[in-house]
Length: 362
Ligand code: FES
Ligand SMILES: [Fe+2]
Image 1 (tube, rainbow, N blue to C red):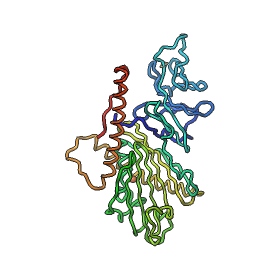
Image 2: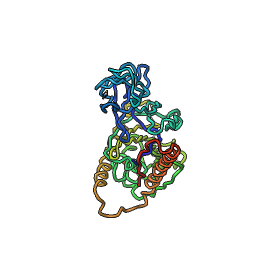
Image 3: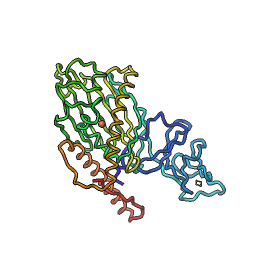
Image 4: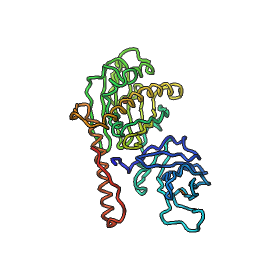
């Protein structure tokens, strides 16, 4: 598997989890999430170690889960606390539990070694706390495509001119060069389109009369968080790169959760620096985002379908690919780092524990 496991991924919007046993799949792990009676979220492997019935087909007994087949019962840590018909609990009767954390209305899950789950590593953005900003939740978009394809799209401002002609792009940006660089595990890709007509999104929400300066800063915090800082300001203001708050500015956030090698969920939301109290405007903006992200979905799913077939021609590399290439490099480094760590642990315990078989992504 080519996934980075030691990272916090978004399991979903926190409000969508309650006392129901909610199944979901992340990196091919079947997981069940529920809340305890006092509201704490719990994530367990969704498979009974007896005959493999998903625990999500069972029922909650207080804070424990009772399997729907023969009643094996597991507590919040995944320990078996009851085996009907006998007084002893077999040693192998447990399920894996996953660390969870709730922040800003988002439920995060740690997919790697539990001991390494540091809540300080959870993504955050200062704008959530700053006056003048309003957060607005969006959807969970399912995309039938490998998550690296989706991640590449989020390091790639060039595509908006062609994929989102009515909302986020227009032809004025087609030939404007893009700058890309890497800072540790973050890939930053950016460009400014100066003195050009506003794109559809900013025509609708910016109330601009003439030309605007438009920017895109795509920050991809590997492995799974993209922040797209984009906006427009009246060209007559001649704002500098660090004066983006003077314009209409948004952060579109995308949290990528790999479901399998060929499916990804993109939880998206935005923060905006205008009409902070106007929920209706937030909804209208989301309607435009929904339109645009469905266009991405169509592209990414078609690409995935081609990737399932043999390639007839060597890939063409072009200048705008730099951000995507940097992103693949960061992910490769992270996966290699994890494999090295697993190898070291394996050697340490004399090869006692089973080691997952992993491939490094290209
Ligand atoms: S399958 Fe779960 S108790 Fe038998
Ligand atoms: Fe897009």
